[in-house]
Length: 272
Image (cartoon, rainbow, N blue to C red; front, side, top):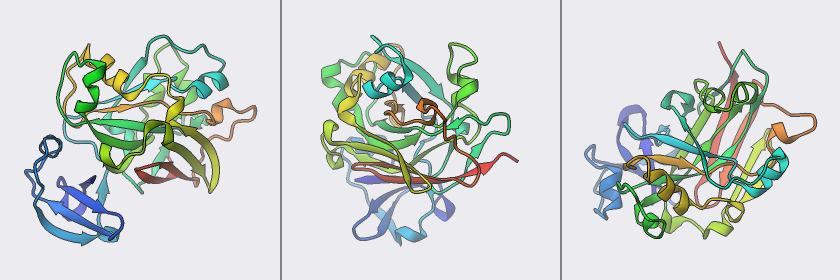
């Protein structure tokens, strides 16, 4: 299934996206990710053309977003940093995200606005102290997250949080693809295109810490709940890794592509 969170006249409801047929089946307002993860058969209350659907960022009420920094071997190499022995975790807040096809905001206080495509775990079943061998049972699916970074603010201290949480600097979507729709991890391609030019190209096989490991690790310090997301890091090719960085600027068009999920598109807009 491809599970969308709808906006517009169906705001707050989940929808099942049929990309082949071009339709969205709108589910009843009491349907939740947890119920879908438990195998409950969804009952549509309406069907609309996908082009008429308003898609919100698929971040459920109360859900948390945690990000794993420096989690691709090639990105660690381009950053000139040692491969970490344990995951580096930081939060992103709801206010830092835009919806699919909604503008992302280039902050006025910095010119170092960078792009990052990230494969992102979506939790379907709650759990604490989850064994790595059991982690897959807790994963509903995956979505695409633009963990766009304000690099100078990210490097103000050892904490990356300020540079990762400028209002509407990132994006999530366009929907959640359940695990049965995803290719094997090593075959998942991650790409970033800026104004049609490919800037990033990586593979899930280059991850340092696997999705299952990250779920297990994080569940040791907090209970994971349905809808929580874990962004798994970005591959090489970011602007900050270039000798002459091509930072994002107002007017740029950014498209992220991940195998099994699809495309997340956002235009860059100047902060007002």
